[in-house]
Length: 161
Image 1 (cartoon, rainbow, N blue to C red):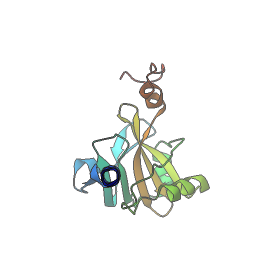
Image 2: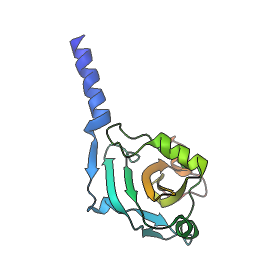
Image 3: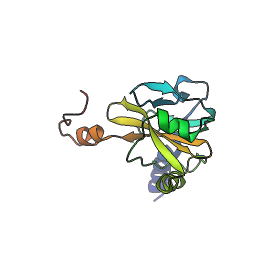
Image 4: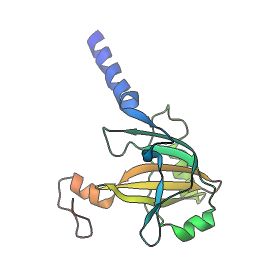
């Protein structure tokens, strides 16, 4: 019984804490890029960056920050991301509330943009920006990744793996 409890505690710790590392605001990994309507990924002006990531999975990246750029300018400059689904962050990373971000997207208080397509094959970086300037980023499996990661051949509109 004790070994089962210890194993359970170890698994919980590794899933919630063990694999994550803080992304320092000064590191290259903290640069948030967004894709313009012309298809060019360019750095976004941000402040107050907080981020986490893990080597164990390409979809563990989460970030919170602010941008001083207006929603009107952002919408006229960057590609909207359809089907954005914020992924739940560990409870200890308090600035990222996937449920609240999802509700804001549904209610129109936030807009999701394509950060970078295929930041890693089959994975897109999504950036959601609230109407008050708060912003969030996460990695999400795209339609190519869904198919290829299930062992099927890539659709015709997907890049080579």
